[in-house]
Length: 416
Ligand SMILES: *Cc1c(COP(=O)(O)O)cnc(C)c1O
Image 1 (tube, rainbow, N blue to C red):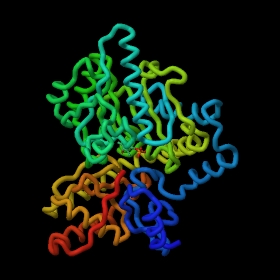
Image 2: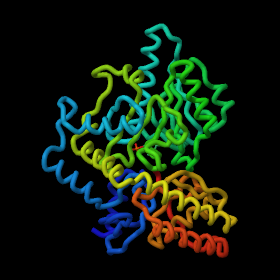
Image 3: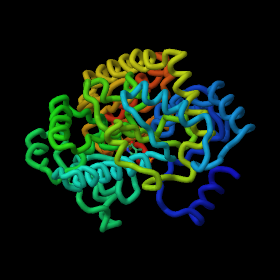
């Protein structure tokens, strides 16, 4: 099937949930994807922050081949060697004590929400006064299931499905006074993305994060850090919260953890974990042998090949080059992010849409989020030469677009 026939068939057969870009990829190697005509694309999005070690990484291929020839699934009724091995690595790099495995980001976040509720319930049984309410942030994104979407700020994702989970109040992100005003004994958890991804690459401020930590500690509410996009090395440290020296009670992982094999994980402290007892929560597929084997390989490869140092080095170079574009082009209003989680804000949504589409035409894959922000979530193995290619293309397009505004066709926004 070619692109046109697949498009026609999808239009008839699939739910109308995605505005796909008209490209058909058939293979990949390193930081490049190849389409059905054999054309290569430099991928600065990595499947929305998923393909961390790029495409066709030999260690990942080998882990998949090895594990798939042995065993794919047995269920959580039985033991296999992957879960504890992976949990050991995850607890070591995160400062957390225990792990729950699942299959996606939203499931990891659901587990975090349920844990906060159960933890508060247990505290009430022990005579503490603590309620069931969550504080979530404006411009947050935590996923699409009913609990996750209830803590997600954008109304378009939430309102059509009302009533979603009740008991969520939104706080102005980085507004310490608003957070203090809305925090009471009713709160069982504060929900924070240390770097808001879908919200446009906005970093939590140290003061705000520290206040959330202090407020949670004062009542026994849980500080929940969603690191589904920012975690597992994306920012140059294993977790974005490690840049702040603030330890949450719970954190969630998914996107890059198994390099494209679906997997999520919720990590938490011993005390938070004690709220769950057998049967209270679970999943059929979560923490299966294949996903665990691949995730172990991802972490071991990152450690062996010193990938965090590459993220910091190439990410730092990328950011300074983006700042160079800001200095040159008036339409660039801001540069944000850490490591290889970067955003370039433009002064118009239309322009951002046009630039993203024109980068695709130049065979460089980027993404637009939050209307005006060009987002870069490249594979961790990105090199300086790839950054140089992308920056010179952006430089030319920004220049051309300010000169001839409105000339090119517009592409569609990808939703994470
Ligand atoms: C992508 C994302 C999610 C949802 O993950 P899914 O795997 O799509 O369910 C949740 N939180 C954040 C911060 C994300 O970036």
